Image 1 (cartoon, rainbow, N blue to C red):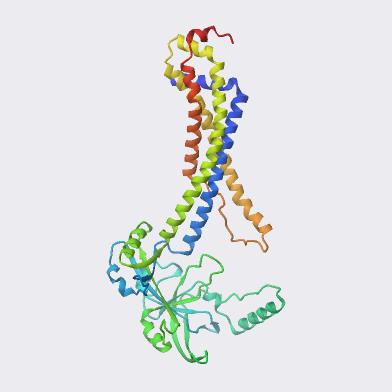
Image 2: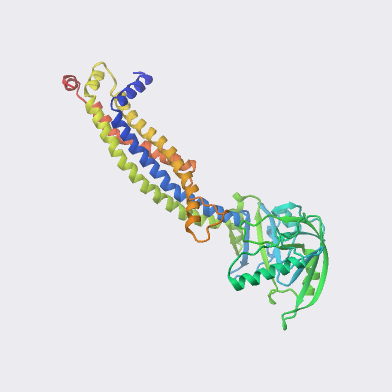
Length: 444
């Protein structure tokens, strides 16, 4: 029997009992859709968590927190052997200053600026994320944070803002109308940076020093709107002058250093991380956090798939009953096929293909339904949260509650079709064992 003839035979037999086959396919569809939608919750939560982590951290960044068993402070000099090491793109040491800083541009002032000393060459190698502009090429060029320009206010704007803050603090009502800040492009502008030395006894600034700089770059916006970046990134060339004037030291608590190693690619982060650990450094990278999270979510997703698998097993009972009845109803046809010399393997194959088709059709429809449900859930859930949570969750709130990757579709399809095929195995074997004489004598 040709394969095309087998297909026509299967289609004809399925059409004979449309209602029974339809209900069997429906059961398979619902079980497959249930498995995918249920597992998609695990994939969705994992994706949302991963996006959250990756949006707040450079994926190739490895933070060096210390060295040795005593967790001593590590410096860039301790990592000298890694400077030209394979897969290490840059080693960036930043010094954050905790002394009053005032930035002035025309008649505007930013009192929230913070000085950060860094090696601009290393920042260039690490691909410092910039919204616009470039990395400084000379000592008097600087990069400012994304919110630096928006916090450059006139004296009148500052007074109005302070009045609004006082009124809202007293009445506990209303919203602050925050000034827009510097309206023009700040790149290319010259600013005056006034640093103040604080008297440890009075807590007041008693000495001041002013420097002139040119803004050549602006960093990218932070991942979250509430994260403000008004930093001023200066070359290490000024660290000696400003540091001596302010008396910077970690003992005085007016500065802190951060040390980061940057891998050339995400795939090499683990290798560099392990090398640093082997040399006694205390490090943390995004890959470690992702690995820990992936272990948890893998267990979580397997559990959800197992629950969905139970539904598919239940639906397989319907396939088994449908195929058993099909074999019983077609006993005479089976007898005729055997009498004319049909190979038992062909007969078994026909019934297995029929059960497989039921599983495949149910899976395809189930996948379509799953995607519709997933899109609906991701659209409706934020609306529900906005209406039920006090104050809402904000327009920028994004939640991937359900995510269906292609791997989940493949897994669900293989499981559904596989179990459907196995469900028809026993009836198919029974068909091949049918006695020819008994089948031909049977009256339908």
